[in-house]
Length: 371
Image (cartoon, rainbow, N blue to C red; front, side, top):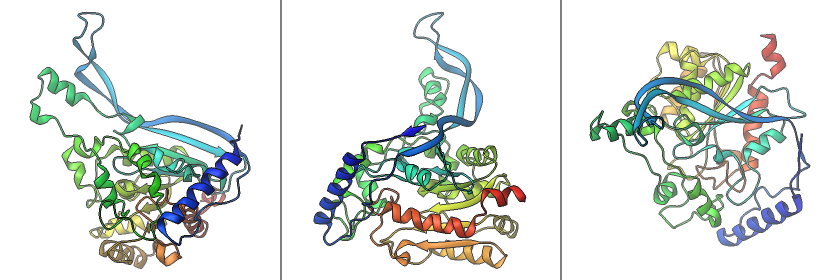
């Protein structure tokens, strides 16, 4: 299968957008304006679902056979995870890589950037990785468990049982994604394509999973979690006969939590924008020594060094014989990166840093098969 875009149009868009950003942001490099790539040749692409469970609901849907407009009972599938993938025709020896997005977003995070440049979904495929995007359970194409809302509407549960819906605002994104010191003010070296920030705001969608079960809000500091995405990511790694799991922001902790659950198939962990634990037990530390792990953060943190949680976790794991690395992008010569560095103007250079770590720390597919 061959997918060929009009590379001349894409090149003009990329160069024009980057040149404009340089004017707006000051003396900046052109970021990842690279020669137009060759056609992307794929062995296979597609999508499927992982995980899920059936639950019985007395307010599952409309009873179209009986009285129109009345609720009916039945089995509903929930907690599944939608996955899309691309396998290059000429792929590397590395095991597949799985990307999962963060709060209030979807797999769009990894696709074409807001200003029309190549995203990591395409780039990692071009670099020879079988590349998979998982949509968090309860989000976007994975769907959310809506039974509680119907239960409340039908009077089966009180209004107080209905969880709120987390809606990410522009102000929230500006602060958390570190676009500038205050809303509307941009860092002088900011790498996010700020003249297309409106495209990012369009990617923000209602977040149900953080509010559906109150205990899930503690998942950021607790190695244990019932978030179904964790088990689904591990199930995908198992079904692929091994995979590198990548989490970002909210999901940055998920790969570690999957390993701590003792789930097989996880060949490497990449946590983007923190996700460290400082309260691992000795048994949990021993478990984490079995999988190479990388933590990557961008720029404009209060301090450019690892957080205390990361220092503690990394010290304990490496002292026990593990392989945990921490990279702050400024230390790699990349400055001005936002929380969304997979969409920043130098996003492909950031990807190269990650790929270099994979080459040096994660066994390739042939080596994995020999184990």
